[in-house]
Image: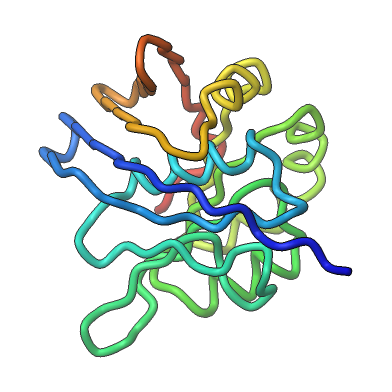
Length: 180
């Protein structure tokens, strides 16, 4: 019998001083049975880092043809494709051909090995950004996961502070590849 997704209800308050974006999003997130708390929380941070009125969480792990997060224009064009983890070179190539901008948020202990393997093949993609979160930071972030939470994300000068109740985690971003 297949396991069902776990539903998380959250209030995500974003204070992004870099983009002058200040908004609260009420989100219902389905956590796939194979998704870890770490991945779920990275997904929420990625949402906060790119938050806008049109940004949407997708089916993620449930659908291979969709990113984890996307933003479409009013005419349905794919403006932003956000992927998490360590996508294959083929997935990177396909996503870069489908969207105006692609951002990969990598994390985990094998991220550096993954990047060394595919970075030379990504030089031709002017619409690709790769941002890395350290394993220590994302593991701390995973400890904040809760089925109902009020998540506050503050962003200033590229630094990210995530808080739930009295717990705070600071994330540093390493930009491995930036758009041209």
